[in-house]
Length: 268
Image (cartoon, rainbow, N blue to C red; front, side, top):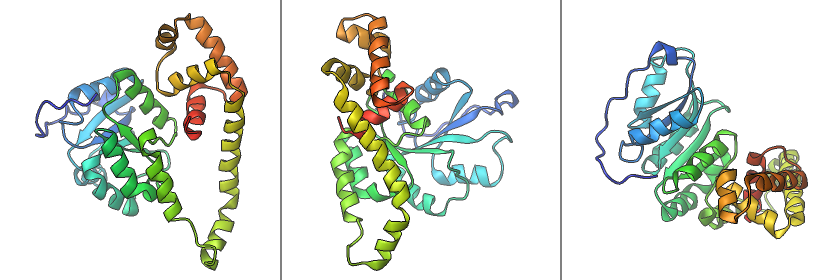
């Protein structure tokens, strides 16, 4: 997906036309080298009623929003920032006044090493602000499906970085002899309990899956459509649909996105 050719020189994005004003925005912050015109056009092709825009840096994007240069009725739904601007992004999130809970956040990384480095450094804040880590070296189908997952509200981290996230969580765990932290933990118990309950339900559901259903779920979670899964497993697309129906029933979910989230929560 990531195209190393080209330069970091920024180009003027086509002017926003009045007919586009009601479309949600997927906003990319970074150079044209990482977020090429191909990336932007792919987003607009794959997502209905979405316009893709790119800004060279957060300051420029913030200036556009602050001065209401962006047409009325248009709002950012997904904000993806180049890993090279992660420092400024984290500082921006602490003082932001333009983002709402509806805006999904992600940091784009070039490879597994970059993903691990981002999580090691910013693990706690990635969790606090629900910032996903988006690999740019995936095949196109998997990349689009992953963006759909993030757009639906999933908090995604590459498998290679999960160890770093777990270490970050251990480091910020409250001390047992700190009364203030104990109180905060107690106040947060309902939300934590709800999350634990969902994860336990996923664990029970995954345990019920047959080896073939686990195989299908793994491919679904990687972003592959039914036809590609069917080809890989040498079965019909109809058979994959039947597997998916049984998988969702066992997991207690209603769609493939929720099934994928369940899969990733178990680090399968």
